[in-house]
Image (cartoon, rainbow over all chains, first blue to last red; front, side, top):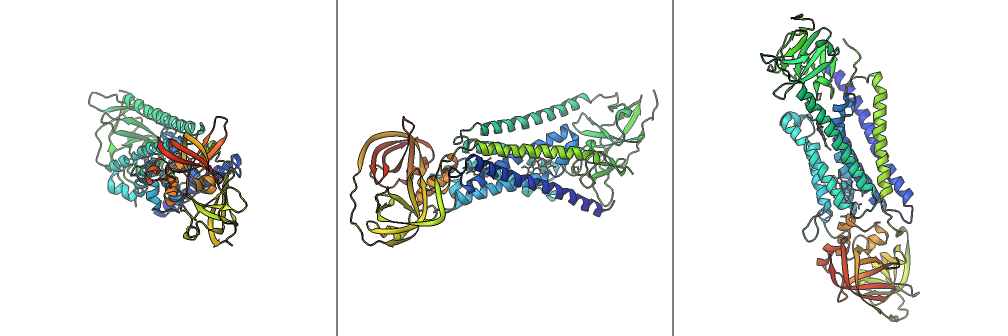
Length: 348
Length: 239
Ligand code: HEM
Ligand code: HEM
Ligand code: FES
């Protein structure tokens, strides 16, 4: 397939994703504004700029929950990876909405006065800071993540550093929760706000625990070693055609054993793009295809089809006694291997 | 080769079998989001009845005083009308120049529970109508009031609810800019009262007290009734 083919269609999906996302954001602000005016109609209305600010702040924290939820969601139900494929835009949208919320705060709470609007919001005259400053710190974290979100930065920083930076999203989450607890819960007496916050935290915590626990059990379960150190993968017939089985090697690395018809080959489970779980993808066009953004690798050598140049490690396989085994020592990325046949080795 | 993927691949047509799942997931997420929007909107506290009528300016005639906050005492004998400027500032110089004189002030009305304020657009010296008006301050005694210090402009209607932690930065800015601070409390019978806040000596609130704005505080001092308002001359403001 050509570069153009990938580029054109990629854009189409992204456009649909972004349109749905933008539509949901507009609908969110609309519903918030309309419901607010329904419960508190004039003359008891909340001033419109404040409604807008509250709608945007609430939308930002909701988007943050969605961003945090779709990772474990896709791990638990691989068929929901379509939510993840454009997580970058979701992250950037979160940052933009939160930024807009802060902008409205600076404008209306900090503006029209005798001081610098930003300073007036962030620092009290006695030099102390309040919950707004906590929100500001959260926004800074989101800014760094959004600014370094492009694959260019991923390549520059390396996957490890970049992933570590992304873990800062949990710092941002904690800061945002503190921002709302100290800024809002003291004035708003309705139970709705603490219940929403608590519900969000429980859902996120639950998803992460369940997804993490499952991964951990899977890793712990699958390290049967033969006498010469090769690792048991299982009965090759149990691997669905065009799919993979993922096993954890003692080293903590994961390997994806793909079946293409009668042939088996093993690749690193870590996609060279953003570290997506390659083994949850499938073989398309004869290539293992990552479920996150569709990067592809020839199963027999771990190389992306031209013009792409990504390479991932391959592993040696053998079939003994009707079971597949993998050599836990990875080959250099892009090293060709000889696929083994399901029936190879026969019964020992 | 294998044409129809069973998984979602971003640059491929969506597998037909996945369409239902995508629609269901997107629908569920959107439903959750919009439900949260509605719930959060419904949870907001009632901001009260303040108005800020910027649709048409009104003109009031009376005498301008400043004891200490600039106020117009209307010729019709109604309660004093606070005078402030456009933005988070006290009234313009032309109002200050007319302190002690009669004047006509044109501006946008802010009003809550009968308390009135004008955001001054223009001022003209009056006809020198009636001389000093008879005013009889009534002493209402010493009180310790648990309250929150509000900025009167936002609270009367410029930015509702105009109270609470979320509004603190704005309220401090307003008071520092010359908007009169006020306090509000309910008595044993549940009746709501308001008083404009001054120092013990009747001066505008001190800068060092502004850090207590929008915090739960106890204000101790002397209450006086004058010009249709209650005034609190605060001896102490404590958290
Ligand atoms: C510079 C950064 C920020 C500033 C100055 C700021 C300021 C504020 C202020 C003043 C309020 C109180 C609004 C009110 O009067 O009700 C507020 C509420 C809120 N903020 Fe922020 N914020 C910032 C960043 C953020 C971020 C990054 C998020 C989330 C991702 C966020 C989420 C919220 C939420 C959910 C509320 C409650 C809205 C409501 O009252 O219903 N804020 N913020
Ligand atoms: C803006 C460009 C961004 C891109 C390209 C991007 C992409 C990614 C990718 C591929 C991962 C997976 C890393 C791994 O597990 O190895 C990740 C992790 C994560 N990112 Fe981002 N992200 C971006 C921005 C953001 C922003 C602004 C947020 C937060 C508002 C965010 C939230 C997350 C979260 C929650 C994870 C979860 C880690 C996990 O579940 O494994 N991302 N990001
Ligand atoms: S992580 Fe992006 S394609 Fe694999």
